[in-house]
Image (tube, rainbow, N blue to C red; front, top):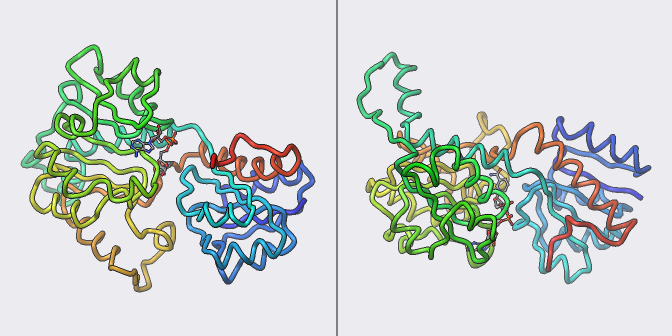
Length: 338
Ligand code: NAD
């Protein structure tokens, strides 16, 4: 068996190499993204694993098919970049990553606390020797209502983490919305319809996958239904937001704070140093991001909510294991359901 591993970070290398050695897999490993210029590295491979920045365009998939590749395994949870329909039409088996949701959940709790305690202002002012309390009055979670959109692995873990802040035993309330409410979620949060969540939440955090039906769901209509001064957090995918509507909400003060670990159009920009070059992106999403970042109540981080020692190791394992399982056992628990 032979696999090509793309986008391999230094921290993943020993894990991927170790597993391939254990299974007797021949490995081609590169830090480069999979794209038209690098697809040739997968010639003769049975499986390909990538992170989230690779190019799964029709042309690249056609080329991989021609090389005899059978399995495509993303090491990320999100698989919106994998061009699934076309890949399946060519007969590829598709897998995504799985790892404990705690890293992203804890990061989101951190984001909530940073927003409600005006952390950016405190940090910036203090660095500038402005030690005043002006503009730094915060809120306490125990008196607030948090709305969690998407109560899968990450959303549910956030709700569990929030329980420690007074949810269900002090004044704090957690509202939840999901197409498929689950029993564990029902035990610790109150499922409501989306309009109610928008209307009643002081803080809204979104954890749905990026799908055609969720793309741009945080639009002008949705924002208009939210409370004035709402804290909005997107640590899932940037394209869940209509970024122009979100920008207007920041400009008008409708959003009390905005925290984004993801930004629309970030592929090819994020996780790459751009300190010495010019970033050109269609529709100028990077320009919009720079503008948004200039607000003292807007936080942006480089898609790093997942990035913990624990999760990174599990992701690397997943990339190799899922290919190995499909090719030796015909199935893997990491296969993406059709
Ligand atoms: P999951 O599949 O366990 O949960 C997703 C939940 O969303 C499910 O409960 C599903 O029913 C619900 N859902 C789907 N469509 C919906 C809709 N239209 N309306 C409401 N709910 C809907 O996934 P997860 O592991 O919790 O991850 C969620 C997302 O977080 C991923 O798809 C990925 O995009 C993102 N993510 C980001 C990072 C990061 O580092 N920033 C890391 C991991 C995951």
